[in-house]
Structures are given as C-alpha cells and as structure tokens.
Amino acid sequence: MSDIHQLSLAQLRNKLDQKKLSSTEITQHFLERIERHDSEINSFITVSPELALQQAKQADELIARNEASALTGIPIAHKDIFCTDGLRTTCGSKMLDNFVPPYESTVTQRLAEAGMITLGKLNMDEFAMGSSNETSYYGPVRNPWDLNRTPGGSSGGSAASVAARLAPVATGTDTGGSIRQPAAHCGLTGIKPTYGTVSRWGMIAFASSLDQAGVISHSAEDAALVLQAMMARDPKDSTSITHPNTQLTQQLTRDVKGLTIGVPESFFDTSLNADIALAIRAAITELEQQGAIIKPISLDLNQHAIACYYVIAPSEASANLSRFDGLRYGYRCANPTDLSDLYTRSRTEAFGDEVKRRILVGTYALSSGYYDAYYKKAQQVRRLIRDDFYRAFQDVDLIMCPTTPSTAFNLGEKTDDPQLMYLEDMYTLAINLAGLPALSMPCGFSQNLPIGAQLIGPTFSEARLLNVAHQYQQATEHHKHTPSKYSEA
Ligand code: GLN
Image (cartoon, rainbow, N blue to C red; front, top):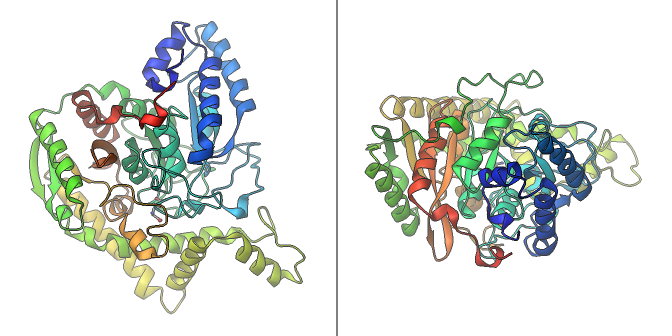
C-alpha cells in the first residue's frame, strides 16, 4: 500500500486492527519517506530507524495478541527538546550536540507506553527561541508548501515533517506560540494545552512558567488521540495538575449550537494581512452557521503581551540556561586556561546569537538595580493580561482570532531584525502568559500558503477546543490538503 502517509491516525488504527497493514510496514513507509525527502526539508536532526523498527515489532506482537490500544503501532516524531533515553537530544544547539540523555522525558515515555513508534528527533529553533526555525544549529527547516519559506518556529521541524507527511503526527512545545504558529504556517492543527496539563519533566526548559508540550497533527481528531495519552499529573513535575476533563476523543462530536464565541475586533487592525482577516471571518461565519453565537469582545491588554513576554521569557531562560557551564554535560571548549575561561569560552562557542541575546536581556532584567523596573513590572502586567482573559470568559465560551499576522515568510527575511521577528508572536504570547489552552487550525490559503485560525479557551477547555475544531473540520476541507510534491506515493 503506497498511500499510507495520507491516512489519519484513526485510519491507521483500522488498518492495523484489521491486519491489513503491520506497524512494521507503516514504520518502514515513513522511514523511507524521511530518507527520500528530508534532505531538502531538514526537519529531522536524528532519525532512529533501529529503535523504530524494534518498537514496531513489539507493537505487531501486541496487535497479534489483540492487546493493542488506540495508538499501538502508530509512528510519531518528537521535537528534539524532549530527552530520550539513549537517543541524542540536542535542543537545536551546538551546546547539546553530543548529549545522549540517561533518562526519558515523561511525554515521550507516556507515548511509548501507549505503543507509539519513535521515528526520530525533530529540528527546532535553538532552545526553542525563535519563530522561524532559523536559529537552529542544524540549519533552517524549509516549509513544504514553499521551500524558500520558513515553516515557522520554534517547532518548525514538527510542523514541516507532518506537513510533508514524513511523520503522521509530532510533538511540539509552546512557550509563546511555538506549536500554533508553525501549525498555522504549515496548514496543520496544533494544540497547546492549559499550563500544567502535560508534564515538563525531561523537557529541556526555556521559560518554565510558560513552557507546555502539545501536538501538531493533520486534524483535531488526531490531536485529541495523542494529547489524551500525554496528559496526566506527574509527581516529577510539581506544576503538573490532575486535569478534570481528559476524555478528549469522546467529546469531539458534540455540536456547537449555542456556544458563544468572542471575536477581539482589535486583532483585525492593519497589522493583519487582509487575506488572513477574510479567511478568519469566513471560519467564524461557518461556526455561526453551525449554531454558534458570535460576540465582539475587547482584549485590549494584548498590546502589552510582546513587551511583557520578552522580559519574562528571557529572565527565566537566563536562569535555566546557567546549567550549561561546560562542566557537567554538553559542549566544553578546548584547552581552558582556568575555570572562568572554561565557562566563558564554552558558552561563547556553543550558544548561538539569539540565545545569547535572551541571556543578556534576562540577566539584565533580573539584576538588582533593574528587577523592580522590568521583571516585577512584567509580572504585574502578566496578571492583568490574565485577568483580561478571565473577564472575557465571563461573557463568552471561546475566543476566535488569527494565529499569525502574515502567512509563512521567506527564509532570511526577518533574521536581521529581532524585533520584527518578535512581532510574529503578537496573537499567541498572551495565551501562554495567562496559562490558557489554545489551538490553531487551517482555515484557508493565501497565494498557496496556509492560514491558521486560533481558538482560545478558558482553563481546562481542551475538549471543547478540539470539539469545535473537529466540527469545523467536518464541514471544511482546508486541513486535508498536502503540498503537491509530498502527496505522491
Ligand atoms: N517565538 C517565541 C520566542 O521566540 C516563542 C517561542 C516558543 O514558543 N518556544 O520566544
């Protein structure tokens, strides 16, 4: 069978259960596609064929004994931010180029226990800092819809590999938009759950109070299956929670009648590309036709999200990245003259420019003379941004708005201007600051480039978000397209 890569996770499950395909055949098919196509996309940093085929063999044995569960035997690829026992984990950095973790992250562990097959580790912006996957030590990832453009970031490898159908689904992480923005640029569904839903244990830390893992997939249905297997309270992560609503797949078929969707009109000003505005409005109309009630709302504090995030995230990053000292693991410079030279040169030689920029900004904001003016102030603004959402959710069930201000941009277009790059995140950052769940789903194209619509919900509303996206996807075709080059057998 040659169209394996076009099948949804539910379709793969059927083929496996009916013994029409084995997990080994499915895994080999994806490994061959990676081999054939990834040299031009660069979505994988490490491919793990031996591990994958060994896991597939075990899955086939379970299936033969009729002991399979929903994800047994289905391949996945992981963002290279998740530590994988015995499998190199780089976080997109020269610093960790030689790092082979002696332990497994909770996310990858849970998915392996659910029977999923690990195809390999995906390219990403260095330490997940970026919006275009161009800060990776392993080179930029190319967008399968147009190889001259970025797939978005920082989970760019996750999005590009799924869009080119080199993996049926992928994990990602989202600190300020890094699941939703690349999902939007690659025509995919990407969900970032409520902070605390998914354990951060073994996930290399960028900004601990914002980081959350999630899924990038072709549909809300696929995302629900995988996220459901990831979410659980983990004693190893003290910020993880017992989620009150974990049965995501069961709730996909609810209808949207009577659901109130708020639309923040200020998000549709001149910063937004006109085609994107039209596509989002059309998606809103589709949900209205299905019975949703649409209400204009204001989310005025969103205008402060970029300034607030770019103080808090670098502050936390500067603390988290202090562990990379050239001593314990990771890169060490050659022939250090003394301890200070070892620290300085190891970090100078192994961190890229964007990481250094964040460490400098964060260390400055946290320094004793500036702490009150920057870090403390940013935390206060963060609370107001959160309150702004909580107030909005007193009147509406969900919020719908754009994911990104423009479609995928050209490689190199914004690399010289960090502030221009930071503007990419204008619609996504506030959600992380507030700890809320949100997803991006495909809602159209502009000049053959995908457009994403963002749905935001109150705490713990993952099931509702995926349900609304699923109902939208039942009525539309935007999520079904594959870049022509990658649809063939
Ligand atoms: N683009 C944002 C940043 O560079 C968000 C990154 C992320 O979500 N990991 O910080």
